[in-house]
Length: 305
Image 1 (cartoon, rainbow, N blue to C red):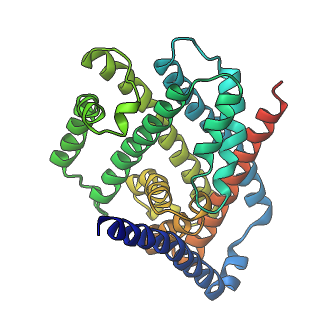
Image 2 (spheres, one colour):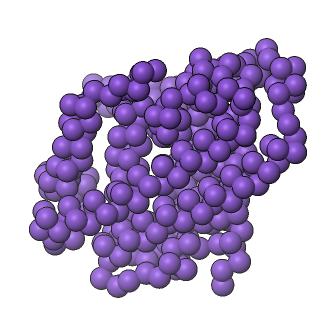
């Protein structure tokens, strides 16, 4: 009976991971088609080219912070230290595999390649788990602030303090969870005090927060360059839009690198301020910027001997 229940749950998840990204992609394609002529009229090819060029370079630089944080996690779980060159090669060559349908292949690919260059199983597993947690914490915080901000830019301060309080407690929560959940017990946490753990995770998760803030700046540059109505969008919405779209594309399985899902979220968030045509153009330019940024990192990693 329990086995049947697990099979049904697995089937539901598989169907969910197949159909939801397809629905999001169909939604985006339908929106593009319905305002295609307006998009072409609004498109300044020369300006868009320079936005894509500059934005993709900024996004590539932003990805270096993620790689730095991953290396710090590897070193935290390891007895020996890993240099940034190895981290860049492993992370850069495997991050591109997130574009394979499923949006999960970068994780096992990174583990396998890490083993090939001499990294141990436990640090790789621990780094993967804590990276996911850190990115979700950072994106969740920024996303939550975005939902709390209204057009008059009033924020419910008690909610912000609640989220900050949860983040402050997170090392203790992690210690309790990892010591009690059978699967996570296989990941041996470093023998550190709660205070030492908090200090490390606070520094590391700040890097993830900084990553989303730089990505938000990249999105702001795109909005500023693409839409004449950029000034009507509250700054808080701009700085949370990328994190919200990233979060949606990550937690919804199936879509390669969140394709379709992220664009749908951005269109829904921004169209009320700048109109559908501009919001679609912004989403498409952002996707181009992120793909090229990942490609730059991949090429740099390929060049490393």
